[in-house]
Length: 342
Image (tube, rainbow, N blue to C red; front, side, top):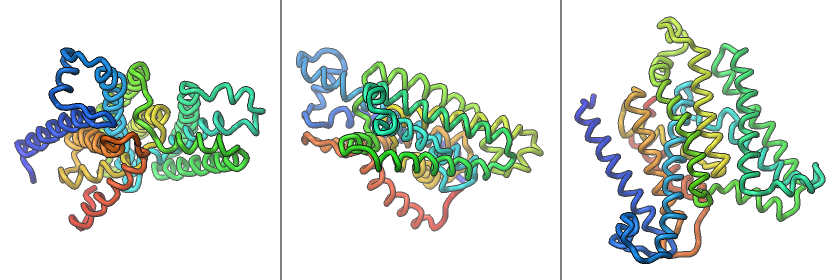
């Protein structure tokens, strides 16, 4: 069993690695920037105005978005896996992403159903964000209504998956009747993107994300108790319904808002908790939650740096990188450990 000094060392290494990945991320891209020039830009002593604009108006917002996305999805995935005691659970098992996808599909591909005039005028950056947020909120509302009437947590998981199936079916119908241009626009949104947010949008995303993280931190004791099983947790005095509600709301705030602003980001929420457990070898959420927070941010920064294709004008879809990089790593870790820590 690792002692406190071991965990302190592990967290110190993770924080240093996070800082390194952050600076590496903002230094890489289609325009090469040396370390000395980057330091001058960050300190405000650089005289190169074009590089200053690139760093402050594009690369820094993107790097902060990567940290928010990686940490937020990692934490929400950890909470879902603990709540449902299911290693395959992720932040999107409640249908949150499917709801967001349906909202965006109605905006982009709903012209056949709504005449195109009203819908077409709403296909803007903020229109898509609002539509995704409303879709996530409606699914969340439905899940909350169900969770207040159902005692079994696994029933909520199944109902969330059913909501996801319904919304996916509606999106498929809209896709069938949409034009090639509309379908392409929706597919591009589904690729996910970290580089399209302004500082104003990053700030709004951060505010909602901050409240989600606060709710997550307030649920640490409940998460540790739920590891013992709901019946035993209830005997210890844990209010199951209230704790479940807080965890679901926290997950929905994190996953729903991130999806609304960046599109659906695959793999991170599912795999980061498993990767962190293999490294820390603990089920204590007082250690696991902050570790997942930092580790998720690191992995997202690395994936974004790879997706940028340094010195190239091309940027790969972030979903491609997160899946290609992350899935083999998780498989290797699980095969190496020969068991799943949970």
